[in-house]
Length: 359
Image (cartoon, one colour):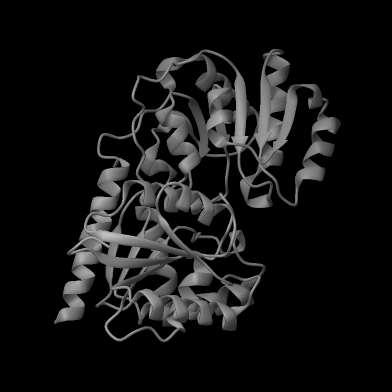
């Protein structure tokens, strides 16, 4: 550890390179000024990639697969070992586990909210589970020093659902993305892609219905669906039933960068998004984008890239326009942070949290 550096323990209860892992990898690659970051996660590709990039990672039993008792023990052991000034949790399971763990005296706790939705059905099986989790989050916010939200929509939903205490510091820090080193090539074509979990909240069936209409108008169009999930079999069956199977490829898990490089338009019709890296990467690469008007999407995308409904005709028209009308394609807002600006903002949150602890 360098002189004057302090340590922040990032608690992330997932092992795979999906979802929040991108945020972890970007932050560990760029680093937070003045801080040494240590990742705590289950064994797997995420820890391996952090280490391969020169970062520090501890692996231990943590996450839903191991249970709350063992997860809390892993967090407590890591905190006793490295004595972090800050424990920074990501994802709901880690948020609750950290709140229930006894940490060394004087440790600040911070949480980043990546995945809350206005509609409880997006992430919960029913109203009883949603209510129980809301109570758990409302309680754990009283133990936090700061909460970071990845979009204004995310923060608004946190306030509405969890009613954070007035003394809790709340901050929006959007996921940073670096502009390409060379201007993106604005390709003119109808190679559509989707990069998402194959689950109901991603509305892939609606995408297939829209693509079927597009294909009737543009026979050379193709659709690549990257991702895995519980709907894969039913989606393949729907593709067959619609008669579009020859033009549709189900890739399974794939490198998003490779998928985007071979596409012209990213379609993402989710019920809710907070601050999607897929959308950010697509815009940075110069692709067309078709996304639903939900969550943080309007904060990063212009009206030309947004759809207010998922009727097949609406989706088909939007995909065709984004593929062929280059002037309709989005660009990131001027105020959008790059990765260095994102981590600088996190450093400010850390400094303020430590200052409050020192009072």
